Image (cartoon, rainbow, N blue to C red; front, side, top):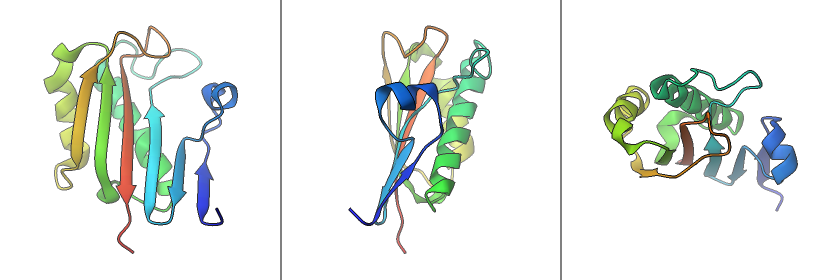
Length: 129
């Protein structure tokens, strides 16, 4: 596909798993699951609010590299290890998407790629122009 743009973050997982941080095909941008993973431990430590904010910053960065923005997001998906944190996570989502109001899903999972990770976020965007 000549109109396919791959966005890489250069993470360890991209190399061993064989995927892109984001893919833009025409007006559609799909951002893979973003966590707060870092070599010294997750950004935000064991604070799910801080981890969620870092995930959304990474989503935003991938979108921008693909030529999109948060305003183009039509769907977000959250995978969390503790659904009782729903309201705290929701407040962070609201900080980023209060004016955009994308469709959104949040589900509890038994584990993410590392036990220290508490949340993973995916996003889909559509560019009108």
